[in-house]
Amino acid sequence: MSLACTRSLFFTAFVAGALVLGVSYYLEYSVGLKPCGLCLLQRFCLALLTGVCLAAALHGPGRLGSFVYWLLGLFCSLAGTATAWRQVLLQSDPVHLSTCVPNLTELFASSPLIGGVQQIFEGAFDCTQISWTLFDLSIPEWSLLFFAAMSTLGIYQLLRLVRIGRQRPLGGELSHPALSSD
Image (tube, rainbow, N blue to C red; front, side):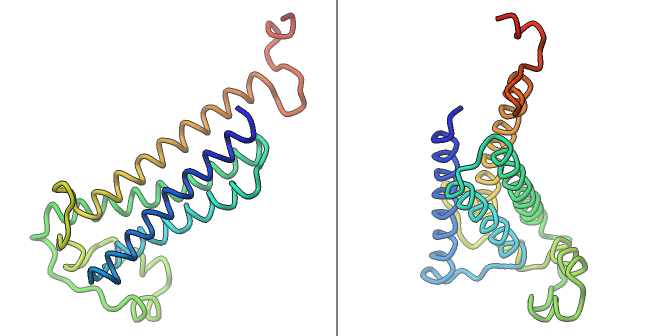
């Protein structure tokens, strides 16, 4: 696949991520929805994914660079998928939660980063509330769908780059002896 197609795919992923980020800020500041800790982690993963896609679109990398960018994007997408999946699970069974996670600033000031993220993943009561739906799907469910789609795109592109790399290594010679006679 040509460089222009790779750049346009990264740019399309950037635009999609920027639109989703814009919607999340609109729902927070215009509609008045208050995001919980898991929502903020999903937003952070989305911002990282959007930044990676923007950097890749501006950089216009070759095959190896594209592989690295898709790998970084896949990592961000999988982290967002795990966070959204956890919140969907918490929303489906809110009975077991009655604890309250302190303010995020206080949480990260009192405990290390990993401990704070672990405490957020354990959940809080505000993570289980469904305050807005569209087509009967809550915000975390929409987020899960977006991150799953971006993960699928990343996996497909990585597998495609590996397949192309096996047929034509970076040095230009063919890796399969049967193809060299063509």
